[in-house]
Length: 139
Image (cartoon, rainbow, N blue to C red):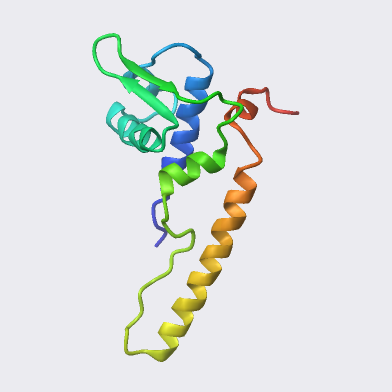
């Protein structure tokens, strides 16, 4: 059976792009939730990770909301990936029976592959900024 896909990265990119399109404004989580078709609680959870990484900031209160902390030209998809995923593995490496010598070897090798995959993902994502995503798509 297929597992559910974690969409926090794509939601975070969507939210950062929305905020970049409204420079100088504070946008509340209810308004931000409309475009990615999610709920304000999920938006606040995702933006909380971006805030912890210093990518966005928020102000509480009736006129509060969220804004980017950096210019969109300097905010890469790798920055967002790292904020959302931290050190989570890219590959789904399982934990084998500790008494199994094959399992220990396979797991160690998969962890090495995971590090390579993570590096490749971050290298690729570092090439694109939030400002790039604001530009009209090339046809």
